[in-house]
Image (cartoon, rainbow, N blue to C red):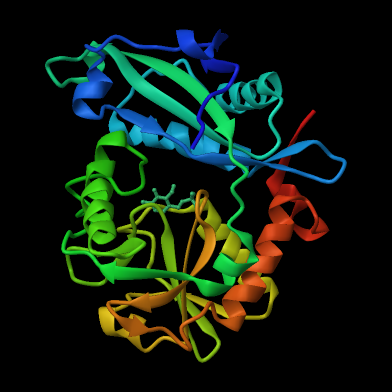
Length: 307
Ligand SMILES: Cc1ncc(COP(=O)(O)O)c(C=O)c1O
């Protein structure tokens, strides 16, 4: 993936890509003491680039910072919104991935957030590798990870804290080495939690079920899918999901900013449905793909146009 761009936004200024560097003794690098967001912008027909649910992402970044313990932050959600817009604009991007990172850039070697300095960087890079109709229809293969998802009182599950993602690295690396595309993690009670970077939905007899948000990230794609499915007249429930409920589901799909909405064709060597992305997932995918490119007036409220 080419991550180059002309500019990266660092603490209020656009900096040339090569100059957007930090020292090796940056505490965030050692302890994962940072919070981040993953956001996408999309090319639209005639309306420029649209950043998907930008304000929601900016607010979640500030919430993550609060959860991690940052106090008296000078950065506001509005600063994050403006920074993201500036980066996309300055780089002339249409389809891009935007990565704001609020990190401990100095101090705090005693592991006390109050003794550190916070910095904000916002990078973006071109992201036009649309998976294509075939992969959307084919779905991906997953397994239940041997690694458990965070306990809610060990790592804070509502925050995108960089250090939390060691758990995702462990699970994803193991699953891919085993020949799968993605890992499904169970929570400490043994119920389905989420994937390494996606929330998960199960469909059975026309009803969508997804784990409640306590042990998982409150995904912004998840909430968009909730609304789309409800508008389609489908029932959507938040409830505990057991491993075997995945096996006997008619359809299972995962969703997140990076993955968008992808069906699971197989879990633990058990075919899901007929082993291809199911019909309900396909209709949700279709509406979602129109929504992100501002092609559906019902969901244009989710598009933040870069003008
Ligand atoms: C662990 C985890 N769960 C779920 C998601 C999906 O969240 P969103 O739809 O906001 O990208 C992500 C991605 O941010 C994630 O990292």
